[in-house]
Length: 265
Image 1 (cartoon, rainbow, N blue to C red):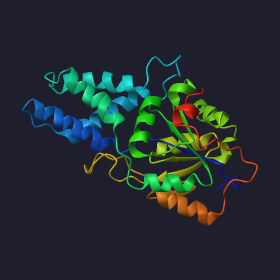
Image 2 (cartoon, rainbow, N blue to C red; image 1 turned 45 degrees about the vertical axis):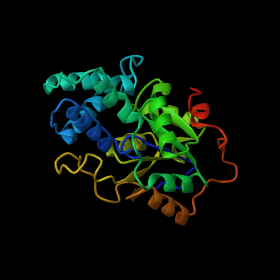
Image 3 (spheres, one colour; image 1 turned 90 degrees about the horizontal axis):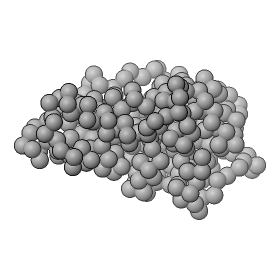
Image 4 (tube, rainbow, N blue to C red; image 1 turned 120 degrees about the vertical axis):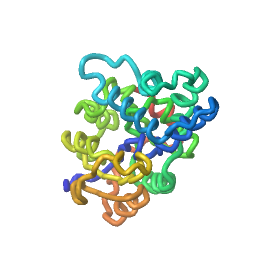
């Protein structure tokens, strides 16, 4: 573990902070019921997630991105519905699934308390593939306060590209080793660590619902600098570690909204 002081925590947001599976599952089931259909909302939610992630990861490697995550949700949904024989879903159904559901996602129960505790000592940032608007809407819905929103939409390229992480650290005016990447996805942590970030794995065993074969396998404990089951546990460990920022740390103003702080790209 590096001895560099942690000054900022950069949070993956979809999955680590937000329970995407429950929101999409409910939206698919509601749309199906409108048409007298019983659909497998859990399987459809996971299919949409896989498709949209495949469309967004590493975007920008071949040129400027031509879409954001909201676009990916709609494009992937249209393809998914065609593949599953659900063309009966109309425009209102599609908006409810591709826009209303993700912009209304609920945070995991530990997030609000843990994030509030961490913000007492650290810069806390949403560093996400998700669009600015999606992060802002879900923050407002869940009463979450970010010091900044660093959406890959504004960085000009997307994780897992190394320069996405470098640009995030640069926007915070910090060396990568003073940033702690917080995520439930090992691939995100591995990419961040490769450019110098410290890493914290938050285990979300039901991120993909209760389907036993849906969730990717996780590495053994001890693989990352921190390995916890909640944001509150991470806050407790960091408090016990006594590694809060030095008094010379550059802090972002907490009286500004996420929109004011997160969209200056």
